[in-house]
Image 1 (spheres, rainbow, N blue to C red):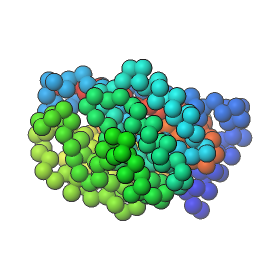
Image 2: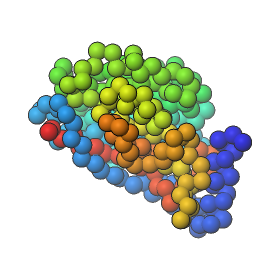
Image 3: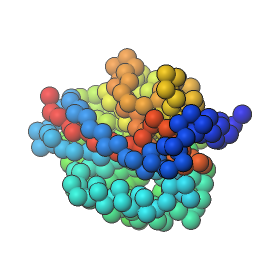
Image 4: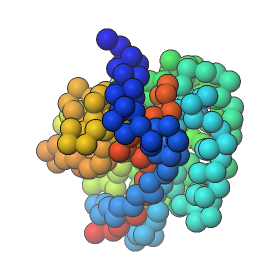
Length: 271
């Protein structure tokens, strides 16, 4: 059975169990604003306390309209972050949403820059078009490469491309990144934590799973697209700490049960 069919089945089962939440559409638009302090080795004092906003899996589509995303963007800009990162799946296989979602993301104020990687649905839609639109609106697409945040010697932001579509090249992304440098890895799938840990990446941000999107009481997620079982929140694998964002959007049905959409803020702390 395809993942899409499984997600639809999960929605139907969840709706039968917790119907009112689904019928009135409360949870898919009830955004959870989570915060986390992160001690980053090698982070210079000039970046101590910087706020990094992490968005993932927006899935702009008929199921996730642009006016909903616009309201989220407006709220973000009431207290703008210093840095914006996006870990993939901006759209869901409809090219007509590319221009609108990238324009909205380009509106987010972030003095240290805006950066994104692509996810599998971006590539299944039109990866090159998504990349061009991001750049046009001032969001830098990191494709198996790194960039300095706050100037040389600041924070090294590393972006590895999508694993599910075979575009990932972690070795290329990490080229020239010193172990002593402050660094954060952006990846779409949490399953990349295994090679990331071998590369001695200290911290990674990702999405892809939607947190399961439908989570039944006493059971958890019905479906999660991680071969290693990662769902949401913080995990550790050897020396690598990873945060899995539940994402802002949904696939297919407008269903989220016990799994609210998420905007994740990380406050960077010098040791």
